[in-house]
Image (cartoon, rainbow, N blue to C red; front, side, top):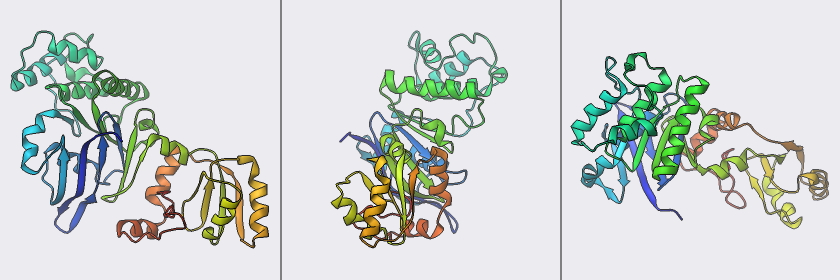
Length: 328
């Protein structure tokens, strides 16, 4: 198991009677690109602000680099962040913007600024003022500013929001390069799962302030892959039948559905065996799911199930896989 670089325990932020973040438990491994997914207003930015030290939690705990509580203050320099829009001096060029921050950090190393500009793909912009930059260029310079001080953890809030396809590709390539060349751990929020799926190694999905799910990129791809989907009245009755048929790669995903990820040509045989055993089948077929649909179904589906997850009262199915469409 990879070493955890960052974890939160019961992280909560409350404004008056409103809980913007409610008991969130994140687990981010060293060297990961952790995609933090949620709709606008889900609590992503508030979480990132607390992790970055820009907001104080109402309750809960953050642990980074083995430090927590008051110890966090001495390791804040190991965290670089770009929260919301980058703060740039529009009448200055990229080099001068970086130079100002380097001076604040006491960094005077020769070639340091040039290295950052090359890392974020802005080495050729010359004296062009940042107010004339495209949105994608501004975002990349914002990432460059976050890199001053050579952080081990980079926190990016919606860095591809509003960008055109070229801008998205440029920011995506920058993030991938930082991870591959600098072994940097990156926490990146977005509401666009399709784009994050091209670079993220792990995911956390947040909705209405609550963390619904954490999963790896492999687990996400599996859940969106081609499969046999069986709709039943009582899916727990089908489990012993599938076990007897030798199926091992299947999942009871909610109170009416089972997904089978192997032997996809045997759907008719499965239907026949279930019928023989007197297990009523409402529907069976081969299907898959688009990434965005997976996200939308997860965050906008059965509200009763979402409340059950939030309250910790999810029913335990035949083999602990029985979770309201979440496949946990």
